[in-house]
Amino acid sequence: MHLFKMRIKTQGSIKKTQLLCAFVLEDSNKITGLPKFDTKTSSSINQSLKDMRGKLGKLTIIPISGKKQAQRILLAGIGKKENLTNDTVRFVSGKIAQKARELQLKEFSIITPPTFVCDSILSVSQIIEGSKMSLYKFEKFKTEKTNKSPDLTIIVSKSDKISKAVKVAEAVAEGAIFTKSIANLPPNECTPTTLANFAKDISKKNKMKCIIISQPELKKKGFGGITAVGKGSKNEPKLIVMEHNHGSKTQKPIVLVGKAVTFDTGGISLKPGQGMDEMKFDKCGGCTVLGIMKSVSELKLPINVVGIIPSVENMPGGEAYRPGDIIKMYNGKTAEILNTDAEGRLILADALAYGEKQYTPKAIIDFATLTGACIIALGNNVAAIVSNNEQLTKKITNSSKTTTEEIWELPLTQDYMDMIKSDVADIKNVGIGRAAGTITAAAFLKSAIKDTPWVHVDIAGVAWTQGAATKEKPYNPKGATGFGVRLILDYLQKL
Ligand SMILES: [Zn+2]
View 1 (cartoon, protein in one colour):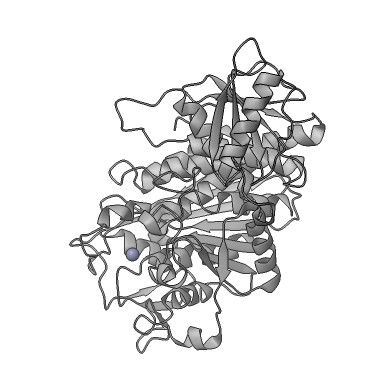
View 2 (cartoon, helix red, strand yellow; view 1 turned 60 degrees about the horizontal axis):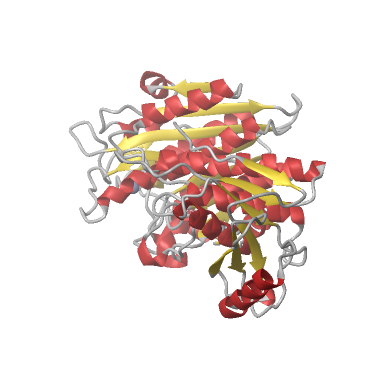
């Protein structure tokens, strides 16, 4: 997988640059960090500042004549001081980077905002994430590719903490970009085997243990959910496992599980044709786990993390599983199939039970484009979470505030667990009608594990941009968003 290169460095003072960018607050008459210019230049900068008024996301370019440090000044509005969020600098940096590319520049410089906007370490992280992620384009299948990305210099006083922040932010952004690049692949170019090969590649590069469990072994070991769903496709299912062991031997790992249905037709319970192409994104949860594992191993985080990705293609066919079937899951429970389009919970339940049994983890977090009901409940900018543990939920929520990948918790009480009881098997793979669809799906997952702290993240609404309902962000161009990569990397770094 080719990732575009963008060189990033920091500098304590401004040297010659094609584009020097400064953040300005709304209705402010001050610009922090610009060098001293002659009277004529200063007055034209001030006039531009008055005209643009620092509105959020507004960019103004002022050409500078003569031999100056900068060929152009760019003023970037960050809006009102009271409306600043943890996303403001990231969002605006993305707009700046796209502008620099549009101007076909070789490089550009950004002055970190004053510390009341955000502290310099956070600023540096947000500038890097925003710029890098905004310059990514999915153009693997385009004959003509975009010009090279411009390099970035961040103007900030140097320190060890800043150098570390740069390294971390680059790895985090690259993890998210990696996730987007794979998730955007079309279904004919990305099967469970392709995903397994990506896992092998990153594991080899970064010295992780990688185990791929294939069809005969899946069947033999009793992965009834994965086997049943995978039966309809000639692209055989895989269970992908990556181990990053950088903590002590006695330290329990964090297990990350991601749903990777490389294409979801719905199976025998076939989906309607309209928008079915988007079902290539049903692998986004697995892609998120791949991106996280890539960054975790590159950063050599001093912890133990296991990534588990059940991957299948859900197709109708002579061999496909049917509504009415009763299957035996990995944990020994039987499940009645009432809708073959509710396949995600079947493969996830197997993977969750395997993760708990094999690793006795400290916590399990899973990502899945699981239910359309999640979009009805929360729309396309907030992911639903369901959990069995308050402390773990609190930690994930805190990380969500830092990364601004928004989440909202839904309840999971015994009443919901009762909704998946079956007349003929232990449980069934749908709830009661359409009621609380996101929660009854989560109830199915909960039934697979015992008492390990667990958070389930339903990313059906947020994993890829879905028309006007998705808020436009420069760092989330059309296609997969990489939702969850930054969130979990933040959580893992704080452990
Ligand atoms: Zn489905």
